[in-house]
Image 1 (cartoon, one colour):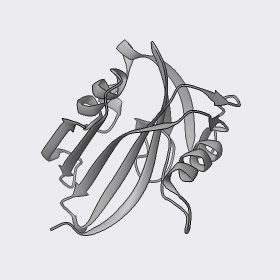
Image 2 (tube, rainbow, N blue to C red):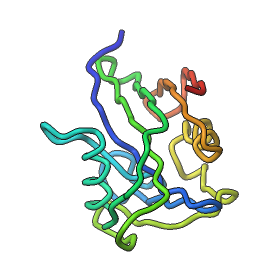
Image 3 (cartoon, helix red, strand yellow):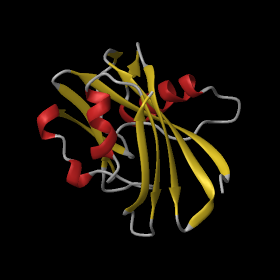
Image 4 (cartoon, rainbow, N blue to C red):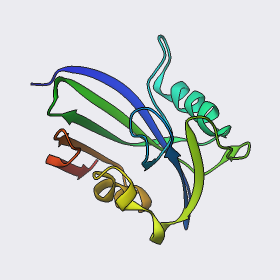
Length: 155
């Protein structure tokens, strides 16, 4: 069952060999390192949402963000819902990454990305992201965020 599709954005700043991630401080995904993003506002495009979310969450504006992936996330305990996450890469931005009520940004070397403190799917697709590849995927999680099913391919 496909379910209601909810478009979301996720943007990671990648300046090899470093990536900028954020510790989610509240709400969905709290306590995990992640990229920056979220839901679209009514009438907002996906690209506009990327810029707005990054400005709100860490005070920067990506200036060359490119969509590199789409991942559908489903949760066993929410069978009628699909989170359609549009993944973006940015290498340039204006502003200085600054902590907000929602996120605490931190630079990581690619080799020290804290996968054990991230969503479990990240260890599958982030290496594709880091290597500059485009991808699409699908993950199904159980109630404790374990992966039950997964599909991931280069696009």
